[in-house]
Image (tube, rainbow, N blue to C red):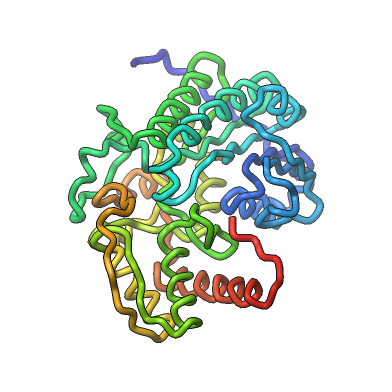
Amino acid sequence: MEHNKRTIETDAPLKKDDLIVITGAGGFIAGNLALHFQKQGFTNIRAVDKKPLYEWYLHVPGAQNLSLDVSHEENCRRVCEGAVEVYNLAADMGGMGFIERFRVECLRSVLINTHMVEAAWRAGARRYFFSSSACAYNTNLQKDPKVRALKESDAYPAMAERGYGWEKLFSEMLCQEYWHERGLKTAIARFHNVYGPHGTWDGGREKAPAALSRKVIEAIDTGSKDITLWGNGEQTRSFMYISDCVQGIDKIMHTDELVATPINLGSSELVSINELLSKIEKIAGVKMNRHYDLDAPQGVAGRNSDNTFIKQVLKWEPKTTLDKGLAATYVWIKEQYALRKAGKRVGIG
């Protein structure tokens, strides 16, 4: 659909006491994003999540923490009141097991973005960020582990992942129309598998790096060297370290060239699930006996991020190597595992 191009007017610089609203802040990525802004000296951060506060992954000192469900319109209005920038990372989601099993929950996240973008616009917010996903891409392009990297235009013609992917695609469109029709500067990043310390590591919503790290730690602890992988282990993915992710969000949000323009935010370092496990084994100093559950959820055969566009616009791309990021993640999950075993309360997501 063609639009008459809107003129992008330059914003006044963001002041340190301007209100920044972050939803999903009790979760992994948004919690780290709140911390990122706090470290930059922003003093007015409103962090929102439907989880009770004691279940939040990270608590940012000095932030206004609210336990509210933003799938309800009245909560979105309350949350966005006075906001200068809004970062919407609230969504019901998890790893492949969660996404394939709870499609209704994933689709219902459409309520969150629909109410949040409207509330942000009504509140006069300057900019609005939406966290999309590589699940929005056409699944027909992801049937081979030796997949070619996905570029932004590959989302259309649309054949998104059922449930989660379609919700993301619709919400992207909504963000684009709020810019074209109503002048709210929206930013849209398609995340590719984010991992790192303070992420979900147990309980069914965790992604592959955390799940495999935990399984190896458990195996070492129990003396069993058996591990079960979902699928044949040949599925390929790229994984982005959390610090790269929050840095990318900040850059994308504040680049006028990217207003209402979906962009990949991911690593282009492609590995198979078997290779991912080998890297974790190397960190742990152990060799596992691999078993394969071919009936388990495994998602698309291959998916990687084409970073041509982000490098062109931002002169930047996520660059933490998987070896470096996994090492830090493994150490953190091992600590959490030991604390839980000792009877301490730990967050698992």
